[in-house]
Amino acid sequence: MSAFSERMNHIKKETFVAMGISVGIRLRLFDAMAEMDRPVTATELATKTTCKERYIQQWLGFMACSDIINFEEDDSGEEKFSIPNDRLPHLSTDTGDSNAMWMYGLPILTGVQCQLESCFQKEGPNGIPHESYGGFNEFLDLYGRYGYAEKLIENTLMEVPDVAKQLEQGILMCEIGCGTGFLLQTMAKKYPRSQFLGLDIAARAIDSANKEARENGIKNVQFEVHDAHKLPSDWTEKYNYVFLTDVIHDVPDPTKVLQEIKRVLKPAGTASIQDFPLRRRVADNLKSPSANTGYLVGMFYCIPACMNYGGPGYGPAWGVENWVEVMKDAGFNVKLCMENSAHFVCSK
Image (cartoon, rainbow, N blue to C red; front, side, top):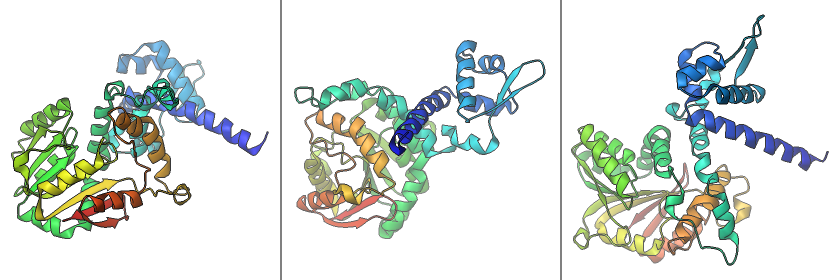
């Protein structure tokens, strides 16, 4: 067997394992095992999770044979299964483990593969509509809520210390592409003297964001449905700070969105535009830890979702050098920070 054949065999096996882990994370089977806090039988886990026992038997056997969970059999032949304590944090979305988050989102991406293959064909469709990605907004919310939101805020504001001071004193901030609004609610609680507005084109996400803000008693944040390509005319020079994360590469007309951001910023305002830290040359991305995720998500979601609505389909791997040029052409002064992600600090 050649070295590459061995590698392909390994990839196949690990792909299968990932599919099994994804089922366990999405159905919270690992969480249920952790709550029981002892070796359990298939019958016990099925009862705990209100699942069919035959499916639980198959899943437990698969996870045991894949060395994800432990297996033991007593003298009577009863089979029991448990999770090593050091693995628990990596098998639940509640802990904020990024790998667990991606395992949760796996079927959202793979579910459109047949449509994606059609998009590859010259005579095929340009892209895939948002409706085909069932559960994608929930996945993004989960990832932000338990994954990176607080760390992203901390890292971003470290690179714009003047903005951090202004937020403490009280300014107007707008987040474009806020989704269900968890990041902005976190900021609103942290900076009670400032006022925050989140906008998104997804009405369901905005409804959810406003509902949660009301339930949590957060009075200095609100969420509205808007298209970032055409913001309200009376917003000219309204905001001190505009924030976007992993949004600019998805919009149908990035230049128009950037021009609108520039218009709504105050003369001394700042825009923080976060994106993947990937270069335009493949050679410069070969050893990047972000390349695997950036190229895959770009291929399965960002490019087809953007091109379906007439956009260029730049995606996360288009390259920071290209984005700097586009932002400068839109009239911004641009400072690129690459310490954590690609953070484009834009000013007039």
